[in-house]
Amino acid sequence: MELTNEQIAEYKGVYVYAQQVDNKISNIAFELLGKAKELAGALSTDVTAVLLGSGVKDLADQLAEYGADKVIVVDDPELKDYRTEPYTHALSSVINEYKPDIMLVGATAIGRDLGPRVSARVQTGLTADCTVLEIGDFPLNPIPNQEQKHNQLLMTRPAFGGNTIATIACPNNRPQMATVRPGVMQKIAPVKGAKAEVIEFNPGFTPDNKYVEILEVVKSVKETVDIQAAKILVSGGRGVGSEENFKLLYDLADAIGGEVSCSRAVVENGWLSQDHQVGQTGKTVRPNVYFAIGISGAIQHVAGMEESDVIIAINKDEDAPIFDVADYGIVGDLNKIVPQLTEAIKAEIANK
Image (cartoon, rainbow, N blue to C red; front, side, top):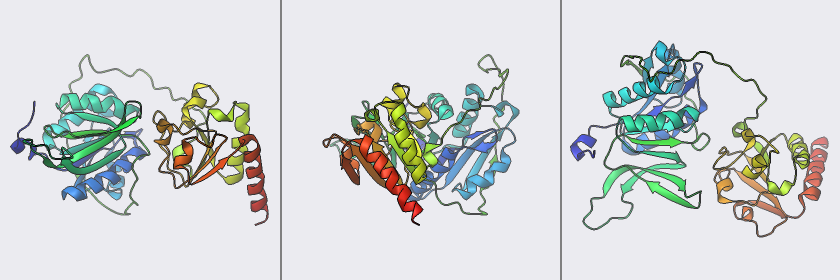
């Protein structure tokens, strides 16, 4: 059901779902607050974080430091662990009560489950996996006999397997909802001591047969690498040749103080786990230095690393698309180049 202009005018503010797990705020919440601050500035409005959980009120100050002007807290034992139905009820109730103009959700495992359910509940659209969010006019170019609406959230995301980019708007419903992948938006520098207006709201919970009962939580402990936090990434693709050959990349990473990552083909071949994957179906990274070794540079991979400060490509194919985005490129056999580069870096460090 489309809203009238008068009804749309009732919706104000940029809201962020502040995901927390085990009473620890997820990094994506801080990233979304940074983008929300920018959007709110363009709309001359404020930023509100929505914090759902049990015993989580003390986390509000952290959200204030990263840009939240207000924090709406829904604190209830039913929200202790993430479950679809109670969390959907809580966030939908907040939206219906406070009427946000924009609602941002992280495209995490939780957000991908929660966002679509909430958007259906409040009868609005949802644009998933956005890479760019900005305020502008829609349609982008005026169309005769059609109203061009201003101050719309323009949501840009890859489409058709990354082969094209689509800019989507939601001009006739509210809130305007988007999910954003972790690592795409940047946090602001925290303002120590900042405070937000804390609003406690509880819609009440009536458990029914849609409420999943959690019998036991078993936490798997495994060694993982957070490639999104790495300042230097040494990334390998199909061209590396084999799992054993990745030792060349690990040697380079050890010498330069970086971490090893990879393309989708490497994960599909079973050479590295998905925790290491960069790209549209992996993680979005923006390190200071990104080595692309034996990576052709398909658009799906580039979408996950093109914001890196410096990109260095090593590939035997001089026509590989990766060279179009690289700051520095070396055409040649990685089996010869990478060991020489590693030894040169070790020698340089030893001389200091």
